[in-house]
Length: 199
Ligand code: GLN
Image (cartoon, rainbow, N blue to C red):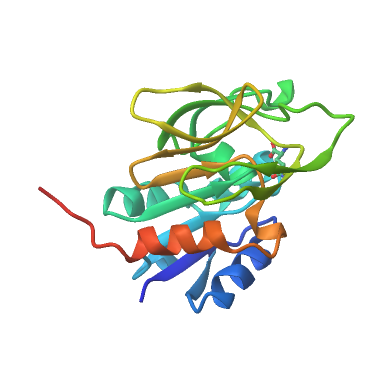
């Protein structure tokens, strides 16, 4: 059975842990590069991406997470975690300048893409691979405004791509860990369980 890590620097990591454990998946909270050892997948949770990026630097996690991916690890970012995975980040506060990211997903992500007045909403979202809609919770959510070649859009809300996948990297603008529906966690655990095929 796969063991999956949850980046536990800040944000909604406990909720991800609970969803995975309810599926019988063994979970490791990741704070150090050495915590990645033996994992098949890593979830980057929602929270505040500028804070998480600063903590990634403080805990020296940028290169270990990139190396984990290069070695065959699966990654799933939700909301702020999705921002961390993206190639290009738009909408960082000016004092931050260019926002650091892992650059493991060829997309441009726009922070807080759904406006500030409506901080939070839930919508019944059709997701490719699921038989019926997913109750998707958006909280100051980003959107993927440019989707590179080879990046598959798995869900859209209006005009905006809100779930994308490329190879072993998946990103959702919404928070599947804040609803009791575990189908997306089961989907990720299934991917992590599949053997990595190298040609
Ligand atoms: N707006 C937050 C950010 O840019 C993300 C919000 C969230 O993760 N719920 O980091």
